[in-house]
Amino acid sequence: MASVEISNVKKSYGAVPVMHGVDVPIRDGEFVILVGPSGCGKSTLLRMIAGLETVTSGDIAIDGRRVNDLEPKDRDIAMVFQNYALYPQMTVAQNMGFALELAGRSKTEIKAEVDKAAEILSLVPLLDRKPAQLSGGQRQRVAMGRAIVRHPKVFLFDEPLSNLDAKLRVKMRAEIKALHQRLKTTIVYVTHDQIEAMTMADKIVVMNAGRVEQIGTPLELYDRPDNLFVATFMGSPAMNIFPAKVTHTGVKIAGVAEVANKLNLAAGRDISYGIRPDDIVIGGDGAVPVDVLVVEPTGSETHITARLAGHELTIISKDRLSTRPGEQLLVDLGSPRAHAFDTASGARV
Image (cartoon, rainbow, N blue to C red; front, side, top):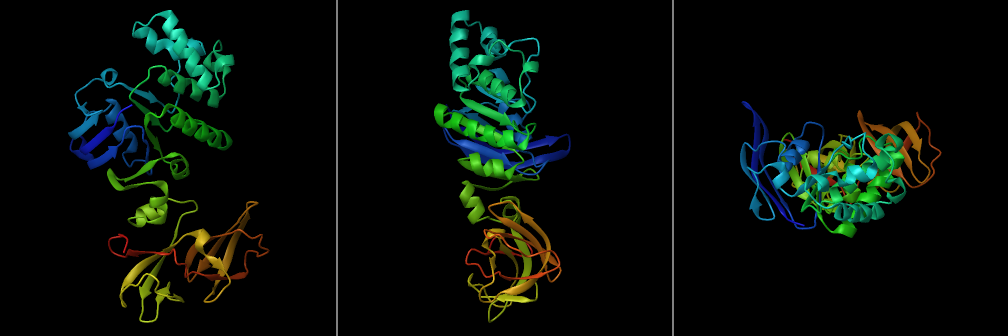
């Protein structure tokens, strides 16, 4: 196991900068997820840690040792790719042990390490099969097993679940989290799926356009986003955002709904008012009418898309509602957990 320190890392392709001074501290044994939309730089940063991309400036250190100029094989890392990268002509056991074979380990040592990893990942009955005979989830476990047998200081995962169906992704999330708890090793994991990040990470790094927007635990990012980007990216469905103005009597939302100024903001200020779908209360004091557009029963919850003064909003109710599209619903937007952001900068206020 090892810490990873990313210090003022910049990356350019020719004259085009794509990474703008990224700082990310990763503690020994921590499960850190880099998350953000496509093109935000998260996979590029992971590849720089692995040594598959060069660093234009700044430093990357693993276990206190600067690795900018080290070859990937000398960094003591193991990477699990999105497409598994298994050798089709080899069995599961051969795939898992191949790196050890290249390192000159004895057959006895290789078998012991492969058997141990296969036991951890429930692959023992599959050791003699070839990749074509495996499901997507089984192939992903083989790719993880190939990394485990090397006992690296750091595991790197590059969107490993994106090729799996929804049900299998949920199962594999639990398996990877359980694997981390068992091995207690450092993991740096890339995904565009914020639900994946929320459910698995000790710490999340939210990236956007080659910059770090915020670093924190899943609940820190969910409950206290630093800016509008993090607020709308973290959480599914996304946070509702409305233009609002602070008045002497409260906060006027979208020009029609007034709620109490629980954020203690100065009167006259224009803000972006944010409220999560599950913080909207149906009915109650101060409720305002919204036009129902779509009703989606999910079993335990009802998701409603509605419109308030030309602005769409999402509501999540734990109740089994009988409301239908075209009807009106009374909702209270004055949650004590509401958020306010500066209209110009998007920063939290």
